[in-house]
Length: 96
Image 1 (cartoon, rainbow, N blue to C red):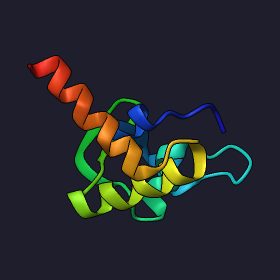
Image 2 (tube, rainbow, N blue to C red):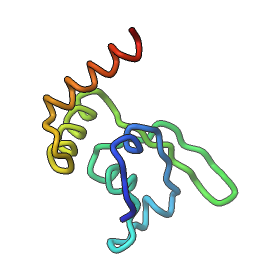
Image 3 (cartoon, helix red, strand yellow):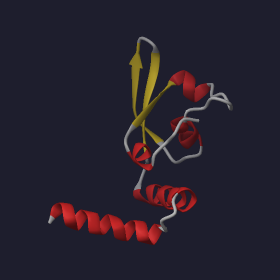
């Protein structure tokens, strides 16, 4: 798997029909893995010359919270509570 950031998960992503229907365990896109486990859902479906393209997104706030809380706890030295406090301070600083 490639390097994946929390920011890139929060942003909309896409996957092809082939990537979703025929994932390879040694080369699966992170978006497809998150889709298969229910953390991402299909927002839009487009037919292209290369095949179908699925625009994926986090379905709701509850899933988003669970996903980020688990990712932050697993891959960060900052606790989830401290992360939220840091986010609040950052918002206050940037918004005013």
